[in-house]
Amino acid sequence: MKMIIKNGNVITQERIIYGSGIVIEDNKIAKIFGGDELLEQDDCIVVDAEGNYISPGFIDIHTHGGGGHDFMDGTKDSIIEAAKAHMNYGTTSIIPTTMTSTKESLFNTFDNIKEIKNSYYEGPNILGLHLEGPYFSEEQKGAQDSKYIKDPDPNEYLEILNYSNDIVRWTIAPERKGAIELGRELISRGIKCAIGHSNAVYEQVLEAYENGYSLITHFYSGMSMVRRINMFRYPGVVESGYLIDDMYVEVIADGMHLPASLLKLIYKIKGPDRICLVTDSMRGAGMPEGEYVLGNMETGQKVVVEDGVAKLLTRDAFAGSVATADRLVRNMIKLADVPLHEAVKMMTFNPAKVMGIEKTKGSITIGKDADIVIFNNNIDIKAVIVGGKILINNLEK
Image (cartoon, rainbow, N blue to C red; front, side, top):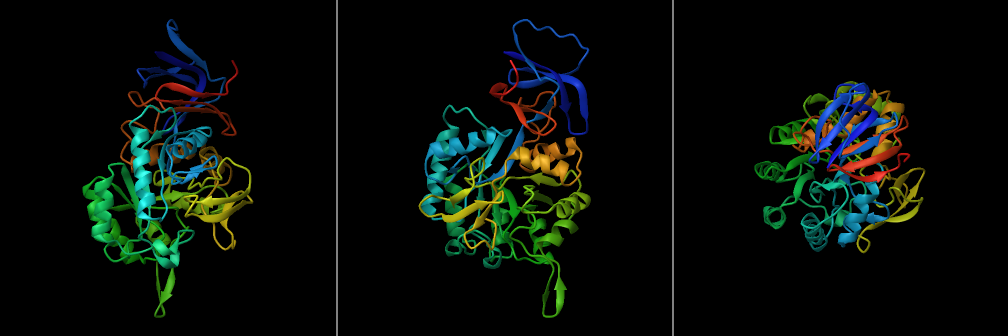
């Protein structure tokens, strides 16, 4: 059925069109119109945006869970409920992310994702899976379990790749033996290669970039910076992210992982077109503070959520975030002084482009999927539309 969303301010890639609206037909964006334009309203759903912003739906390409559930808990319900928890905060497309784990736990997650994608489900689009690890640097492991960390082994990763068609990205430390060869294999299969939990120096990052690694996972977290080796200084992954202009970087803009000064620095150097906002959230997102488990309930690590962030019990490292997409956009505006339409772009079009789905998602453009979120000046979510269907409606009737 046709839907008209009127009396709003449409956010495009380049600007905000005040006093405007959109038309949705056949689950696609069919038209952007001005406020004075007369539209036929027979036999259609009319949504009054009430002067709020009409935005592309948020796309979270790195999240481990939310709403008390982890994507590796081992059940379809946990995956569905975690995804729906993020939908409450504007996420219309999501990439569930794994942790370093047993092969059994990983394959169980594959099976559950496949079943959900092949069945009827109302929630954010599940774009596929992001494998985070186990091919990481021991020095930069962060909250990843060290007993699973190793070098890439073709016998292992080919078994993984041949088991599931739902893997869409993989985060790897490129300095590990065999990581460049793994990157080439991933690129040949159309899977996004990302650098993360890495102690690499610039030359290693550059080689990885030349072999298909085009994204840095949670920038500044779990990665090397400039350091001395035999008296000489070497740039690390962070500096490499700045030096390689076309390298995309993920930013956890929860206000805890990175202070306002670093958010401003990243924006100043990388600009609005190479930053992807991600939650990297664990099960505590959208939940009260307290103790939780990061990863699978049986094999995961106990962590504590306090001060608006997840921490290891030793409190010497973060253990993922409890951020939601609305918080990321809000913080980029308020902490980093980023214009609204650019902050939205970092949560919509940029992630879509990184994942190669920008032709169908990520912006309010005629012909693209009708994944829409409506929010106010504080980025409080008023409505969420996925595939042309209203799934959350907090607008006044």
